[in-house]
Length: 150
Image (cartoon, rainbow, N blue to C red; front, side, top):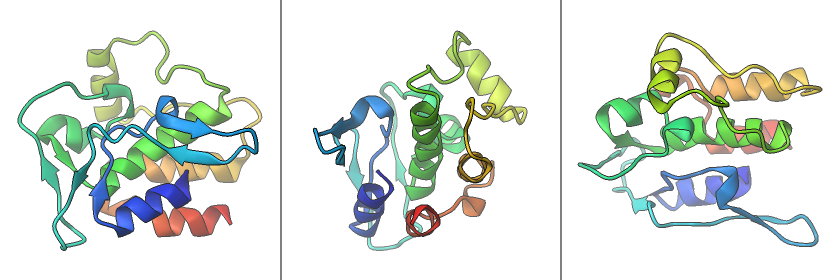
């Protein structure tokens, strides 16, 4: 998943809907990132952002700045990647369980982060926390994520 997202990021795309539900897995356990309905091409500038005016946002997977300002970047995809990693390690639990979207927004804004899934290695949970840094400039790039996981 990280390699696929590194490729998209390198090609100048922002996915905007990275979630376990959008990962296809074949019989050899090869994962493919799918559902590009919300994806957009960014300008040549690596710091470019895509700003949207309306439409639904998958709150539980979306970074605080993307929710607040509708500003999507590779860094907001990295936040979503942290949620996907949490989904995988928790065997498909729903992020933030039964919390309402408004409660999720408020809790995350106040610094709440999902707890480590049961039996999750500390290094993987640290990667999740790194992906969930409030300041998007402090989140790892997909190149770094791939390197950490290799």
